[in-house]
Image (cartoon, rainbow, N blue to C red; front, side, top):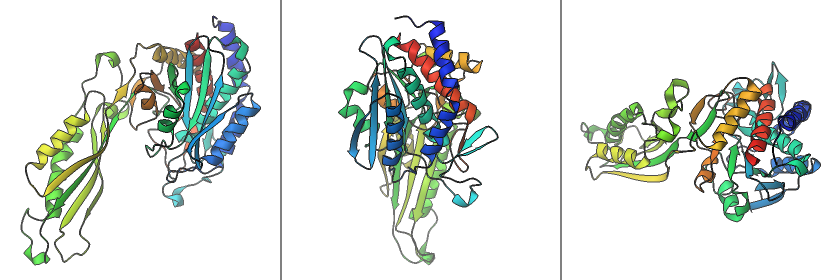
Length: 403
C-alpha cells in the first residue's frame, strides 16, 4: 500500500493537534520517579500502558524484575515492513539537588521548555513515541506495514533487565528497522554511537611508614604515573569507515575522538602510611574505527612488565553504526528535513544506547530525540516544540519505512 503525501499530511496535522495531550503525558511521566539506580519503572510503565490502552493499543508486560518491567505494543498486520520504536523509562540521577531551580518531579512549562527530571533523557521522547503510536493506531487499517512500541527499563546503567531481556524473551520485537528516541543532542541524527571499555587498574606495593617512601616505588605514585601516560589516549581520533563517511563528530569533534577518564582513584586510608594498594576505574569511549582491543593493548603497553600492576577489562563493546545509505537513515533524515525545515546533521552519539542491542541483531538502528544538549543534568529539560516535532518525525519516518 502506497503512503500518499495526503495521508502523511493528515497524520502530521493530527499529531500537531495533540500538543496539549503530549504535554500532559510528559507531566504525568515526570511525576513518576524512575532514577537509576535503582531504576524502578513500574509506575512509569503503568502510565504508558494506560495511555496506549486509551489510544487503542494493547500492551504486554515483559519483566524479569516486577519492579522494572518492559512494555510491548504491536499495531498493524503482517504485510509490509516492521518498524520498532524504542524508548527507555529509567532516568539519570538528579545530581546536586540544591542547584535545581524547578521541581524535579513536577513538569514546569515555561519559556518554550518543559522542565523535569528525565525530560531530556528520555521521558520527552517516550511521550513523543506514545503520541505518534496512538495517532498511527487510529489508521491501523490504512497502514502499509506494522510497528511496535517498546518501552524498556535498565538502560541508564547498561543493565540486563531491559532491552537485553526483552529481545531474548520476545523475538517478535526485533523488527526490520529500529527508531530510538535517544537524542544525541541539538536535534542531530545519530546513525552511530561510541563503544565502551571499562578497565580496572590495581597497583600493589610494600607498605610501611611514610618515612620509608622512595621515589617512583609506592603503589600510589606508580598508579599516578600510569594514569599520566595513558592520558595521551585522549588525543586519538578515529578513521571513519566508508559507510559512514560524512558523519560528524559533533561539538568539539568529540564523537570521533577517544575519551579516557579515571572515574575513581583510591589509595590507602592514612596519611602517614604507604598505601599497599592503589586502584583506578577507567572509562573509555570508543569512536567508530578505534577498537577496545587496541586501547586495552595501549594501556597494557604503558604499564610495561611491572608485576605489581594488574589490568582487568570488566565491560566492553566496540562502536556500532548503521550505514548512511540505509533506508532507515535516509527516511529519518527526510522526515526531519520536512518537519524541521532543514536537513539534520549526522553525528556519532557519545553515550551508549539500546540502539546497539538491535544493531547486534543485524537490525538497522538510529537515534533521534528531543534531548537538547549532549547530556541531561540539573534543571533537566526538553524544548516543547522539539518534543512535538519528534512525534511528527517518528510517525512520518515509520510510515515511509513500512511502505
